[in-house]
Image 1: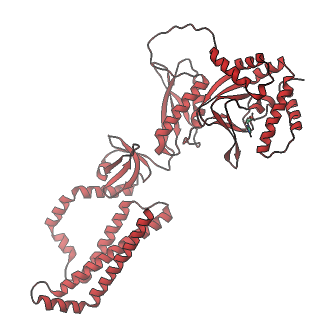
Image 2 (image 1 turned 180 degrees about the vertical axis):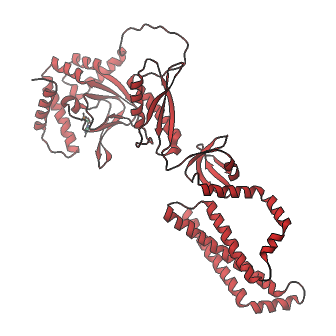
Length: 482
Ligand code: CMP
């Protein structure tokens, strides 16, 4: 659409230039003939024919010069500037260039065609003209000069986020013209702030190429450890989209408040214009991280509540669902129902937000996971880019290699949607093995089968029997068995 319009403009420009050139040719080439024609028609009355022809010449040359200046403008500021600097020159600079170039050329043509008239004197001696013009253009000129000083100072550019004035209008700068600054707010409204207003008001600038920071506040109960809170929140925020990886987020206590310990997290954004979304994501990540780490938000309360709770872990229904889930997992098929119930009791449940990393490839790990609700993707890094090798849903397990062999994690596992996983640790598995040592062998077969499938997707060599023998001895070694 834009391309079609610029094609039309180009065609219009060439047609207008051709007409102007033809008109100039006619008024100069047939000057004596035109003068004769005019004097024959007008006789002795009215202005002199020579003056009329000169005015015509001035008008056509003026049109031609106008077109020439526009073409120059497009060439220098549109194309040349974009190649050298990577962006188009501001509208204000282009307009000033056009006005100065056109006025200068017009003065030259005028004094060539009317050498007897002193244009400078005409302007300077006309005091009334000056006063009228000054009064009429007071605001316009104010904006114009404020615009020039803004361009000279360059406190901000198109694309920066700015907050202007006491009313704190915030948005992304879209255009700076000779009259006003145009900003688009985060509600997609356009606000025009006149240059002279902007010159008087304080302006807060968050440049596009700058790492701008944000603060997000939260609080915890006094019983929650600050060291743990700071660690948990820093790790949760670091992973969120649009949070810069260049500077690690800072989490610190800002106040010991009435209702709890008040914290702030300071983080840096890749794209500051998206700070509303990123703040929201950071808060969401903090909520999930709190839930997993068993941290608690403080809320205002003046009531003293003394509650004596029976010492129970999960509810009965919940535990039943976990037993059911674990008994449906193929590697746990050889376990007796008592052993499965023992595992279920030892399992801890964690909830992850979409996009959160459950385990990271290369990390050490001594637990495995079963997907209770939701879905996860298994990712390996290839040429610095993550590649999904498998998607696991409810009832699937992962992290078994690190648990059974003590090797580092072979891949990263990331939650696709809100996902609840059941974590089973080394100690719980050891208890199961101690009760039933024969289980190791059958487990190692199942794991070898699984690994074979993984090896096939990653095109790794290795036979199933070698695998299972290797795994068997690795598990025995790791769990201190003979
Ligand atoms: P572990 O090496 O402990 O940690 C990463 C886990 O991702 C790994 O155990 C497996 O459970 C799982 N995993 C690795 N590769 C694949 C794959 N190709 N398909 C399914 N799961 C995999």
